[in-house]
Length: 101
Image (cartoon, rainbow, N blue to C red):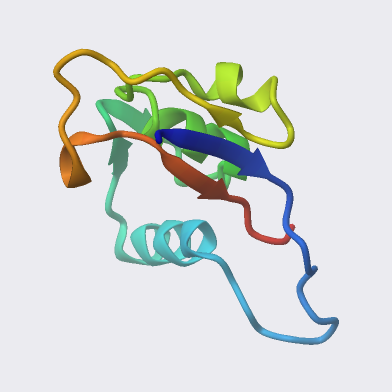
């Protein structure tokens, strides 16, 4: 059954740790190398790190379900099976996890 959920981080980043999420890592690397960032045709400014919501919105923009619709169901939602929807990589459903801020 297709299921989608957008949930807050369960555990926050430990104080004093040097952990970073993928968004911070990729943004920092691109900035240091002087490379532009482009997600789904949207060019991102490397002067300011984008927030997690912006990244998730851009990454899921081409999906079969809008992330704003998923966010209206904090405990997740079972989605209707789309006609012609295949399995595996063809399905654009799943659990979206947020990293600690």
